[in-house]
Structures are given as C-alpha cells and as structure tokens.
Image (cartoon, rainbow, N blue to C red; front, side, top):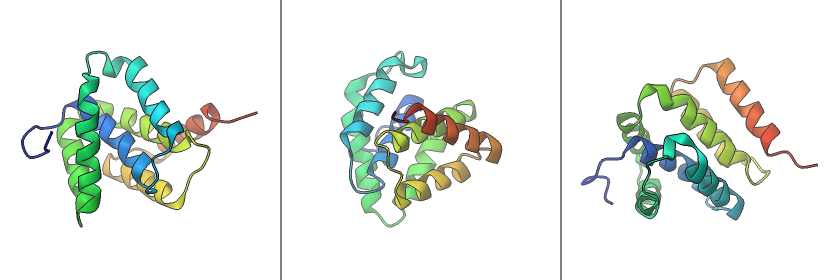
Length: 140
C-alpha cells in the first residue's frame, strides 16, 4: 500500500502510530510486536480490521522514517485518517508499545512527546495514560 494511492483508515493510523513508536529507536523488539498484535487482535477499535494491511502500513511507516520530513508526513496522514475521538486511543496504544519491552529510550520518549503534541493530548491525561502503561507492563 503506497500512502499516495491508498489513504489510511482509522485502524491503519493506529497501527502506524504503534509501529512508529516501535521503530523509533531503530530496533523493533519482539515484545513490541507482540503487544501490537495483541491489541489489534483484541481491542474493539480493530474489530473489522483486515490484518493483511499491517505489512503495507509497516512499509509505509518505515519509508516515511527514511524521508527528511517523514515524521511530519506521518502525523499528517494520521490526523487525516483518525477522528479526534480516537486521539487518546492512539496515545494509549503508543504508550503501551513503548512500555512493552521494559525500556524507554530517548527516541521513544521524544516520539511520545511529539505524539502528545501533534494529537493535542491534555497534559494531565497524557501523564495518566503514561502511568497506566508503565503499571501494565511492570514486572515483579
């Protein structure tokens, strides 16, 4: 799926955000992929999603990351595809992917900050979402 020929659907945009967070540190970890798969398979927002689209969305995200203004382009595509009521959902999913491997690198933290800004996530709501993600992925 080329982003020029096939616009993203709302679930595609959510998948793109999750994949972007996973790829932000240039290492896509198994724990992150498992988290993405689990969410796509179980959350109501993905109920009618065609998982066969994931490789194409992944390719589009990775291609955008190679471009100079790729992140801006990604956010433009996401905002175009995603209704505002799903902005917090996107941030929840992004935080869960970032927390999945138990490490939050500088690149992931910067991307989460950018997602908060681009999707206009309220500061307090963002802090609560981040804390909940951290708690969900805590190990004994």
